Length: 251
Image (cartoon, rainbow, N blue to C red):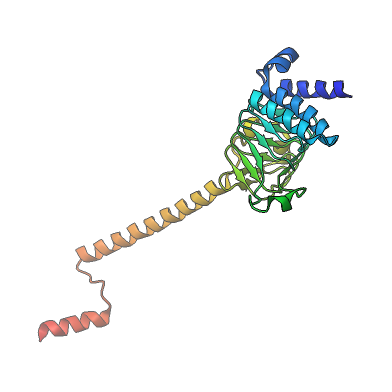
């Protein structure tokens, strides 16, 4: 069983990283795989209630790889951490199968530092569904759910649930609707959006720009009409004011 699990993990690195040419390279040169191997051991020790030993293994892995995975986290099969430096995965995080994280990703909690004893055993960190991709620098915070095949763009800050097959980008993260369901299932490195994918913020900005353009055109039209009236000697005053002005001049 363990042999097949290791084989799946190695194959996942090769499938998702074009730079990984052989299994030997992954085993000896990929810190993401090293961190995952150490996590499997530390989680096993944690499940035996050997808490200190589990934390010790995870801290040694952090020193060696720059990746911190709490042994209490639950991680599924074929998990890939690409590059990996700076990745932090909190204690109550749950990660499904076929998930990919890039460097500087944080699966963190938002609970206050005070009264920490009351938070022991409570869900404080995110849950990632199957097939999720999280781009570099993204921060996923709190006990939220990222649905199956969802994407989190690079440097996004996510503090609300993201539905299955959706993409979240920006600070704070906003959801980008996929053009079709197939795009949601395809693998996109760094959770980059497919070409032509609409960004809701850009759509709003473009709508505002179009409204401003229409208003400017109307202003120029009115200014042109006013100049024509002045050049032809036609007053733009109302008739009542014109009459009053003439009577004043006569007197």
